[in-house]
Image (cartoon, rainbow, N blue to C red; front, side):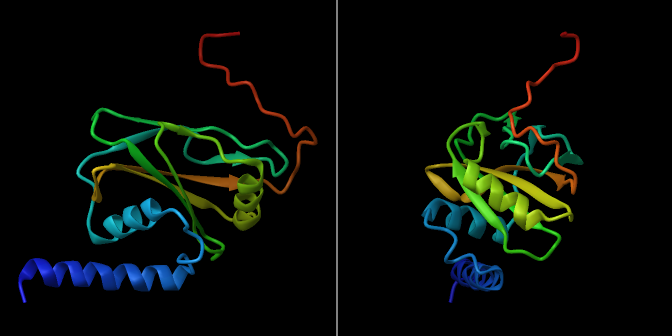
Length: 166
């Protein structure tokens, strides 16, 4: 058996264990999500992305409308993105795929994220790949977010203010 075939089989086994352990096989109807998670389990990204929003350590009120997740990379090769939420509370991981450099969860998805987060932190990992080769992660980034136990009583989108604007 060739070394390449052994590596492919090894990665497939690792991914199978990860998916079974997190109960992910039922969560992902998108084959791209499965492919990106498998690629991430098999190796490191070749580049970096930067998550612009939310900032690392952001605390969200539980009743706030879903925020925008935005990121960028200096490379132009990634055009498919996986946004994965891993919960310190031990709840099952969630993952979503997009073809854009931003993503806003639908209301139901955001409620699930908030519920699974509880009062423990969640790590948001963004993986980038090219749609032509989802087996190779070209960039990644992560931040930690939390959900506050205190609602604000105003489930609206918050207007983003950039430094230097009023």
